[in-house]
Image (cartoon, rainbow, N blue to C red; front, side, top):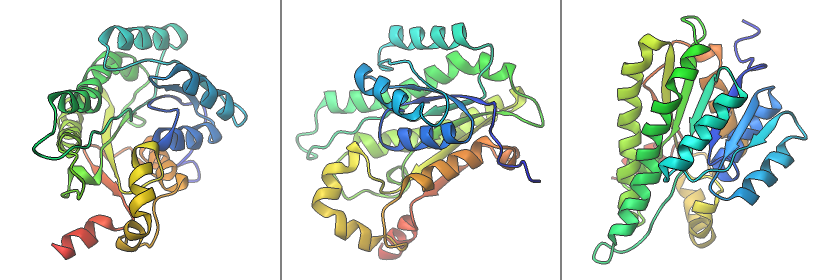
Length: 260
């Protein structure tokens, strides 16, 4: 029982790991003894975050633009060159686009869908074999997809492709959980509410107090909230959980449904 949440010696890859929610999860892993690879589109930011987190443990930067299948293949090749097994994959890299209904462009639709949905499927497909190598019935490998409460409830902002993409991530999580269970790979999703991140920066700047007051817990999410849930989903404590979508939102969805 005392080792239920122990992750020491595990190996993880976190996409979009240089900032926001990905960086929160990365720090939680590194501080708990996980050898953590982070990837993001911007090389300089990725390298800088890996250097910063290496003060607490082992963190390695492998920059890649996951909307480019060739760069995805390079990322997969580098992981396989460096490691014989992988225990945890966190599909966190994401994009958003805001525009009015009448003006919403095709580019805004395709960019979000390619980043948030297509890359999740194909990176999972390409890493499934190496995830399976380290997996067992008692200690399965883990895939954590980062969805959103906007994929469950109706968002206020006009970001049409974003909630559609996150709803797709949630359903893809269930489909993959069913498909990969026999290979000893658990697949779950976290649906964050409001957290401090680059994607949320503008919204929080303009509507921060209103958002906080709408959350039953009275605040936005902090790094420990995201790290804690990810550690749970990666540990023996959750070995019997797969195909679940876990809101980490301070009760935002409850309040939203009450208002509706």
